[in-house]
Length: 303
Image (cartoon, rainbow, N blue to C red; front, side, top):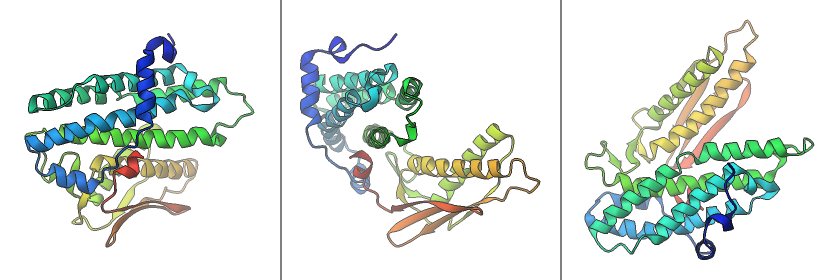
């Protein structure tokens, strides 16, 4: 059954409140600040963190809910997108109905609530993909989906914001872990090895290629395995995984009907004074790369 229209599901007062909060300015939070603040997860710091999220998360969530309601080409009306919109509005309502956080007990209750919000949004990505499929089915065949820049720009903003929201929630929740992994402050590994993460991500991508094609090119990784810097391993893993997966697919499809052995792809991790670059090299294509500062600002993901 298709999701109902906004006015049929939510009260007028809630819709107006979403509009007000969506106009507020969100606050950028740097990875450096999150690491320094979270290095001492005292009750006082956790209380401050919860109070910040209590005010910040509704702004970010309201912005996404508003945008989901105003998408072009009728995408906002697709049942899957309406479902995602309702998840965001439910989360906004939960956050705004939660009373002011004044004590450790309040903070713990709030933490449980935002954990539930994070779980609620676990399936946002596949649900949005379903919404796009629903849009494509109803589009004029003459329209090329890849040329719909407004849709692609929205998806970039939407997914970047989602990363930021989930990072803020996950970091706060993880600071409650009484036995964190070595060198970890919440989600941040203060001694992350990009070579090791690249190796794990590449092995993961190669397994996917093997499952899809029955074979997969090898890969070679070059870099200093002892080099480390503070970052979120899961974020880097996803970036490298996507690059390597696409590279493996390109090589496999090129050599699928050839008598020649597919050459290995090369993954180079190069560290500089202020940044780290990861390059994925194919013999017959230009290189693909990730380049980022050693201290990325989380606001770059969230704006």
